[in-house]
Image (cartoon, rainbow, N blue to C red):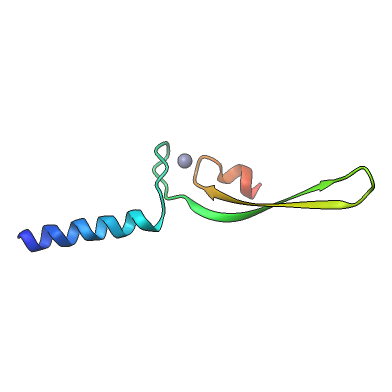
Amino acid sequence: MAKQQDFAEKAKKGMAEKGSKCPKCGTVKVPMLYVQSTRSAHASYRFNRQLVQVCKCNEKEIYG
Ligand SMILES: [Zn+2]
């Protein structure tokens, strides 16, 4: 029995290392590259690349 508990603990730890859970929605946050294009005054585009952690709280904003 003790061995099984150890295994469960290790499995839990492994899950936690993969991604951090959002305390609000409980979804594991997934890192995603979010590209935002902004148009400058000189009619050229600028791209801002950002690595964001996506969970259910902000996935609508990210995916549109
Ligand atoms: Zn969330």
